[in-house]
Length: 297
Image 1 (cartoon, helix red, strand yellow):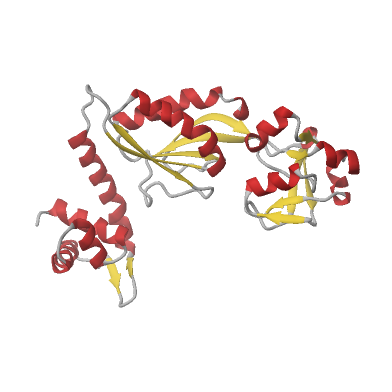
Image 2: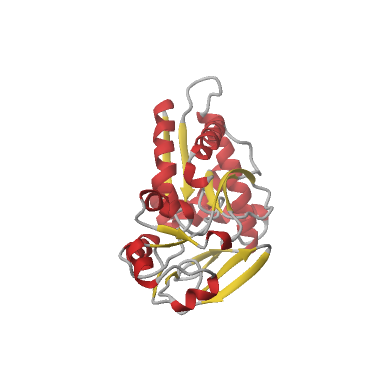
């Protein structure tokens, strides 16, 4: 077995979670997979995977090697399958937040696939920031300030956290004139963002923190909007999540002068490897398409 093949087996073991599962995935016998791992560990001189009767877990050396091995394997696949002057081929794996991905990234990707019929795209929606290397993500759409991690990022817009309520709720209970008056109102709180039961505001350069006693706490934005639309209280979605309802008047945006600083919408790719042509094309397409959305201005 050559050294490149050993890396493929090593990554398959980590991804599959067991030697037997890796053998099935690779269509090899379990003893051959075990031998490949042992040969790799002997060659490097360190243990890469701790093996018990219940689970496998990479050692510190295994984690470091896995990161390098994934880059090597990805570059190898790019060299095999990508012709820079021909049609774009291969698969792209893209992640985005649930609502933003469903409403805005998916339509853009459908149009992108129409332009490149030999490409395939796997979309993974997750409101948690998935590790690009661990989950084999090619491109991420992130709604967040990003730390400097060596990744390549491009800002394509921004969103805000906005307070909204239904016209019926405001007619019955009045419109708060300041964040301090929220303690007189029913609040629908997003526990998926934080369990602190507080909202932060910004007014004339000064941050205000308001402690809340939510009437209802929910960890899913569609349920929050459902309750707010039903007149059960004031909610705080991201601006794009309630853009349609604000536009048609079914929700009213309140306390706009107290909204915190905007949150950037960014495209993120792994900066430690060469960007294949198919990824560059998708990155540039989304960088042109997403800024046109009024919901992220």
